[in-house]
Amino acid sequence: MKILKYILIIIAVLLVLIIIKVLLTPRISYETQIKVDKPQSEAWAVMSDVTKAPEWIKGFKKSELISGTANTVGAVSNIYFDEGGKEMVMKETITKIEPDKMIAMNFSMDFMDMDYEMYLSEENGSTLIKTKTETKGNSFMARCIVAFMGGSMKKQEDINLNNLKEVIEKNTKAYPQN
Image 1: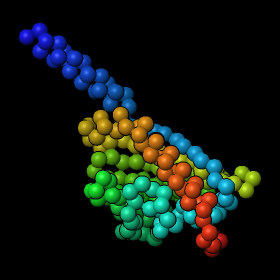
Image 2: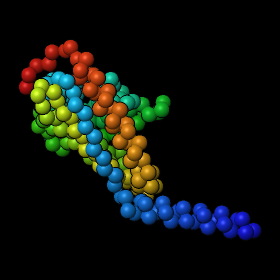
Image 3: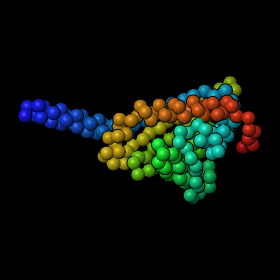
Image 4: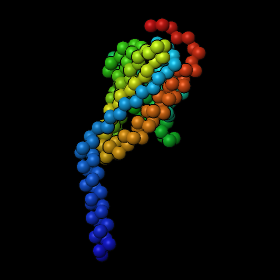
């Protein structure tokens, strides 16, 4: 009986710690950056080329414009991902865009919402790409999960940016200038 009592106390303490973590961390934020050995305009063009997205975004399948004009503020698209054999759909809304310089988007799904910003700046013929992400769960259970997955989300963003760097640096396609 004493063992059961101790197990219940340990479970209760763990639950309280999880609740405290969730209350103290309603959102997670992370930033990452990478330097690419290509000019800013080319880096932007490759990053914006939806046909190249599967090469650098893990699980990306397709983008489907559902309202607005592509690559403009207010454009809304459904973004389809393969997540371990299951199709996942996120709604993407462009909230700000300055071609060749930055794009801000909101990604929304039942589980969570994500605000994402990407900035490009040229430095001596190379391009510095910086991203900022803020994510929050849309239910208590989702907030519990999101509160503990910040490290893995940042790790995936680092992988995606490294993949983007490789795709940009290997690019041979000539893109029209803006």
